Image (cartoon, rainbow, N blue to C red):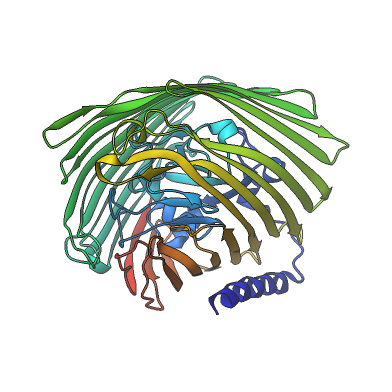
Length: 603
């Protein structure tokens, strides 16, 4: 029944989209058409990867405060685990695990998160912390579905999430402030301001969120700060520097079948400097970044970690039909940690990489892409990473894309030296094969994408043995295949529809990777009113694999906002309006019907 419902929802969405399109004559280009998946802006049809995107307006209308949660309803094949009304947490019972096409892990070491192209992961555990990514800082988000290791290296094995931050675009001072309150004493406050004067621009964002949590001892609070400043030296050269901090405290009462209080106190931060150039025939960037963090957990674990790197790349347009991108990267990451009275001085790991990506257009309709990366790790040597793709403009509204690419993931410092360690580990590897059909209708008001993929992975790192004999080994293999469909349609100037569906078939039981996932979102604007309604249906979601537990559920969310003044908006959001009982993390029931409302001011 759930499978039938999923297929019916997508089929019905398609009928609605086509029916609503009848008679529409004018042309609207969608925001998703321009992406930066190859480190430079290009039309989505010419990118050799499968790329999905969300704008700041999409995120705001979703009623979600966290970027990753918003993506789960807009990107096919993308799923994020949750356990509370606010806050993902860390360690046993923690959520925020990202899964793309059935590839992901807990923690997130197979999906690379970037902020403005800078890698975001801990120096010891090798994964990002989703609580640090708040919607108020974001201009848009791009998700590469499938391996992008040729450009981004390790951790991009399953895909990439690139969060592109806001910047001031208007002369003078501008900004906004938001305050919201909702179920479980959940509170959210945000303030942003931007300033631009001639060649100088800056942006500052401050956030605070807190909740009492769904159950006793599941409270969470976080404070975030982000600042960015840039200077345009001339029309060819510019520099941007930024810094962000996230300080949060959370309690976890453990699964309902085995309560065990757990407390975390975490400070995460990052700073970066980018120097960019752009000419008629070439453009590129040099980026320096530094991530740092301090973790204090109630089980006795205390650690400090860093992740520092330098990236440089340049794209050359070689005539009107070809372009070449070349780049180098240097990374160093690690840290120190201890548990109780036992100190653990962890080693520092170094990585050095060089890559090239070449695109050639021929016969007016075809573009061939080839790329190669060489990554050298100080512990286990070199890794070659190839990719190849072919895209074809069959007609003005039809594009066909084929690609084969390799993904890999280097073992983390934790896997090499800490819990069940093995310094002799080798990278995890995956080959991905896919074909995509992109079609636009009605002067580009309706765009669709249908993708089929096959992923073969081996060398997966798993813990073998128990107790003192436990050791990590490269033993795992998998084969995932599936189909993804997405459609975006601007029906009129007032009504927009977004639909997507993903089907995943694997040769093993996967944790936190739904077999079927369907999403439908409708956004309607009438004068000062905006109504956003979304439906999500998930089936075949395993929350436990040793003794398999599968979940299926249907969620309805809605957000209504009213512009009471040209500088003021009030809003109310409702989540899980069908009052579904479901779990995403085993032993952590998700909230039933929950509401929040607030006000947003702009200046």
